[in-house]
Length: 377
Image (cartoon, rainbow, N blue to C red):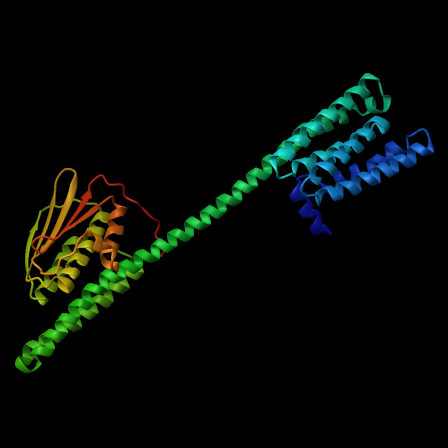
């Protein structure tokens, strides 16, 4: 029972004891009637009011106008015959809880107009019982004006709060999903290159195992070293999600291209100045681009250029391979699609052309809008 009372307090914002008092109070005014007939009529009127009040809460469709209209009529009779104005408080609360705007405003203004008119009429004719309780009558009249609007505003606020919480939850889920996708791309880019290197060196070691056992032993040692490096990078990435330095990535790129017997030519500007986020993304794009050169281009040489001007950083990776592709191919596979998604974070762009081999051009503006995200790990 106590739990139910607490729920009532939260749902109405008014102490249930006040509601109980307002429920019993009509009988005080009824028994002030001059005749037994008026007393009996008042009791029937009060019981009818609470019965219809209960039914009104269950009303739907056009009946949402019927039952409140009957209640307004009973409240008007109670004010006129018994000087009892407190049914209006019940009605104000009911009207304030109507969800649809059109019925709410229609019943609100009808109730306000009728209640105001009958109270004013009783004051004009000098009804002594109503004049004795005039301060309370004025309080009820202000309640008729303000209570429905207050309840409506509170309900709208609660609905907006629910929508906000739902939107925040959806945003949180989307951020988590994007974070998972980012981790998946990082794992793909990190492990893909290392595994490609291991595969190339394994093929080379297999060819050299009888021709040059010593060289084969060295290649197997490099495979062991590369696999341990890959494992350490994955552990560090999962535990720290640290950024990748461009200088370190260039060293690894040289090793991969050398193992694939692809001649590398570099033209890297000195004193490159980029943000940590941009450097990480450029490094990952370089790694993926070189991996594609090794896997798909059948090239014998690769040219890498990184330069800067006042507005942007420009990276170009060009090979002389026989396999060419255009920008539409960037939608196929995790690597190129991942590069485009990463560059979108910093307003970067990617262009692919295939004339004499393949040229991949990546442009990152210095004033690009960085999208900072909270680390969820």
